[in-house]
Image (cartoon, rainbow, N blue to C red; front, side):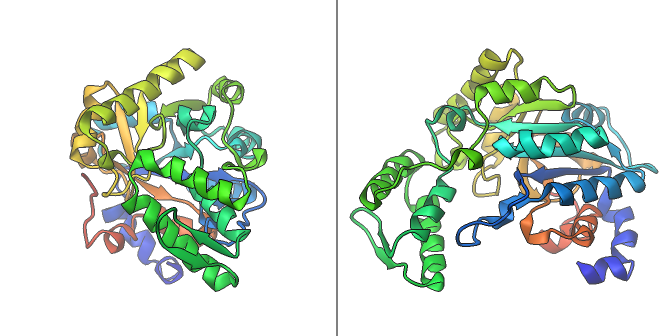
Length: 339
């Protein structure tokens, strides 16, 4: 990506691959991006880096728009022009979005959308990937109940165990099995199945506070942060619709935009896009890597995003990805990423 930017390739690629602009995906924004094993660090960027990215985009003349405006432009058949837009989104509703990200958005007058999962807010679901990391970090061995066991004495062993557990939780266990199994593992290790308050998601009170900012839009993200492709259709509809119902009940406004948990092709497909449309959402975003093009008018419920994360926490990386130069590299040569 450094080579693409400094040689001018990314700037030239923007005309073909940059499209109308992009939807940026963030998760955590906090000064401390360190994770116990370094394996979830990619979910975090610092407020200073966010400030740098937004400042650079403003200098380039990029227009910052809300998801409502982005959806309206696409539906009306927007065509590429001299200016490009960026819509900023944040998944999961972490507390640091309120304490560290919002002040940066306010400084630059940048609209932002937070996709919230009520189950995470109310404790019916947990940030299980962070709990798994904590469990491995503090243990000398971990064991899946009735299943395999891993040594966790060295950092290499711990990271190996973490990735093995992530695969097991993601692909072996069903969505409803994940939390009971994790709770049992935590109980055996003598730890609480949860994360520290400063690393948790916002409460309803905090969500209401940030939702009162005219720059903020609250979107839905299912109730329990489930991988929807692993669920039967009736449960998919329940997860999607009830998340909107609960947010409307608590915050007084029904979400119009949706984000699929995990968001890859293994977590969101055509079935999920069809259901999002049927349930009345006006857009739905994935985690697939790509910029926004006029062709997305026909796939408003499987929109790609550009992930600005801790693995690429340098301005040159963000600039290159948002130019669209990396889209064909990540998607077998394809310029437009759809379901």
